[in-house]
Length: 613
Image (tube, rainbow, N blue to C red; front, top):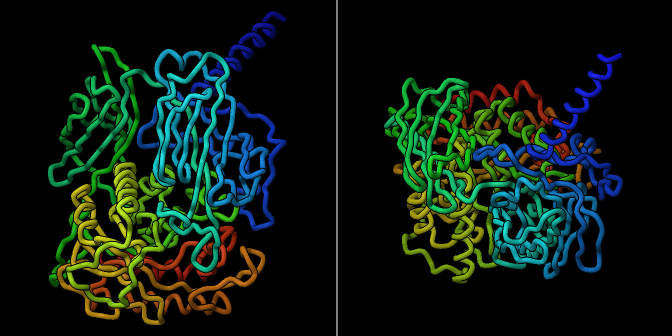
């Protein structure tokens, strides 16, 4: 009897301990989501159908700078906008089915989020940060009526120190959001207030994980890790909130300590490596990092991170052709155009498993590259690319399309005297604020090998200046100045888009640049029961899977046959999935049907991906 009593006492202690750890490590309290259900008759993914609305996207959202203690604020919030109010499931945008609201906001209306939060007493011993991966587009954060921060830009992360606004016990958080979508010059990507064709449903408000994080007065506010293969060195720079502190870095291969270094806040710490393991798509090895900050000999902050040893460059092959090179070896980049849209979550994947699915299947299907098209994903998307071994071409989300220059229609360089930009000074200023922040935010991810400032002349301006500044900001990656746009002799890559039966560049490529086909294909196939609308489209519509596969193999074979003859170094097929009215994905929009003969699809893809091996 006494043993039974003792067992129950110990079990009670264990359960209490687990409850404490759940709060400390960011697990939200699992409450029934009786006020939530999907708010759309559109198709859902399997992950959306089984979504745990009491605990949406519970993973720590920032794998490049991980702290142990945090509090996830995803879940049901109160919302109000333009005469409508109720509950909204964060972090799904209000227009999406998974938000539980499923309605568009007016271009000039304000969307207000509201929630009361109990903050652990231990958090109040130091500073408290309110973080969010993305809020589209202009946001103002208030805590207990106190203004805690303002932010503009739907693709850049937010981190506000809200300590001065907090009280013991319950705290009131309010976030006001204004989103003009394409009625302003802000970066919007494919979002439109009136979606059709290649333009999709607008996304407003919180669309990435929002969380609280307790930190010390002196804590890491910025972390930069850069690999230098030629020097066998990692350079680490950790900036602290106060500019104070000693920074200690340890690098691990699994559990084995392989290198370490020491410096101070804001100083570059060069750490020499031995017996290097290189990152490639076939061997995506990642080193683990522990970064500790000490102030007066006392540890005040510690974060976990990771990086990879790899080098991206332009190299000449044996025929004198300029090629994209990884670790000094030419590599053919072949992959899909990836829009990153979901029928149930729009900009937001239903789960982390869903987020990983597109990347994992892309790799399994024989590709080695993804072009992330005019969108910035949550950090975990790039983390999955890093660990799975997929090279990424990262687009800048376009904005101010109303002032876009007329596309020349030429596949050769235009005169160096580019016309004066049609964008206003304010518009150009916002472009640079966004692009600089995006590059800085994503810069630690080894999978990213190419920056793409412009797509198809959308908002294109001062191309040569933009390419030069982009390269100066990050000389460790390649610059594709204008994918399929107006071409100027700058950057590292010239990029042709061609959706015709012959996907090859229509003119002879310039010999001093890497040549790629940045978009081709767009073969469409309607799969009834798995479409957003009944009357979707593709650039060329196929009748069945056999016809689709045959046409695809023919297109890819033409590129494969001309890798050497036309000096092509990369190609991007449109696209990963169907997207709203577009039916040209190799998967349906709900990710439930793969449209091709998979064996033939994978075989030709692997041949092209390995054509320069």
